[in-house]
Figure 1 (cartoon, rainbow, N blue to C red):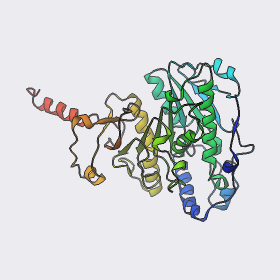
Figure 2: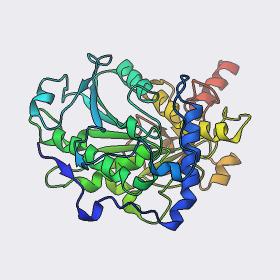
Figure 3: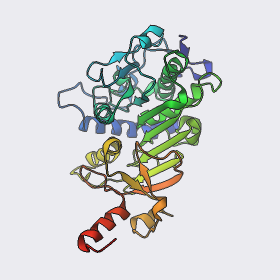
Figure 4: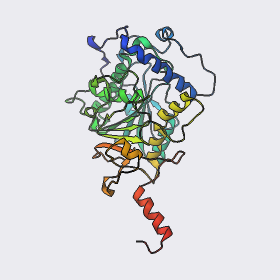
Length: 372
């Protein structure tokens, strides 16, 4: 397999535009949040100033060529879910000798800041999928590069990570035992959502085809709030793009970004996230998107969403959608869904409330045995 590298226009430039400094504080804030929900064990002190962000262990080392040793692809299947296989995209025999099965659905999961293959939500997502059935789940593990921010690489690092994910996609599409791009489902959280979208920029339709689906879980607003849509996740990146919003306009983008955008509980704040500090509250709002999606994989009730003319209409509960307008949010969404949808959840797990109209009918049946 061929290596992939950034061209001259994409080469890293160690400069930061003045307007980017507005986002530096958001960047630091986001990593403060990651620490709130991280591992209990003591970790090295995170950078706390702009200057410290220029000299961190999380900067991508040269050479800037994919595959890169700091960005690894781990394959999990039901047989190997506790002993994953590290796939070497330069060696065809790596996939031949693996438990990859093209008959099973293939997911490529891209975590966000402070994430990793052995950290939630990656672990919980795998468990939910394997509870449901057989899957090929690739975890793109670049955890050592997102333990802390690297300011001097902030403009191009997501593009480089996307390039390496594109290298994995090409490996799978060109391998005799692989699968087509339109059968791939990329799932990205926070900055991982944008990396998922950027992957499409490095694929060639006549060689790789087009990605089947991308699910963006509260795409981060950090460094991605401008008008440069080529750096954002958008509907052109896959045959179907669905977005779940839980902290839009704060740590997440407001959108819409996809073919179908789901604003959960209004999209900006989540029930059950109120805390004694603003940091913890916003961290919860942003990260709660992942347990919603994970529950959607296995819940029998479902997260039923519906269109509403405006956010205000939703908040005032004055929407009256027809039954056929409801769609499932999450893993089992219809690829025909289009537009903006709203969905209400419970404050604690299980979060799914089921179909509102069906719940009303069940209530009526309990109160009136003669109700049909």
